[in-house]
Image (cartoon, rainbow, N blue to C red; front, side, top):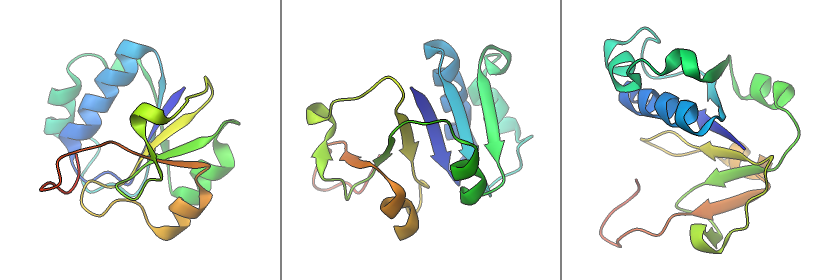
Length: 128
């Protein structure tokens, strides 16, 4: 299983995903451009000292990510998902893809996804 972030905006979230990937032993893929400098202190602070424990690959854009990624289903997490997280059956080689925090993923990313999954949240909230 791999984790991928599409053009993330918030450095602290990337830092938290670096920790998550290191703790679970999964690869992290970051699809650029990002909304911050990669040497951002906030990202490093959120990652703690886990950076060297994980494997992060930066991709210059969506096309580079698609070209370089290993086989496996692309599972997009989106508020527009068709299947609830609790009802989805994951496979070992899935790529779990999360869109931008501010606007989600564009139509071409939705079109490329093999599955679109939503995480149930309260109705008065927009997204995680």
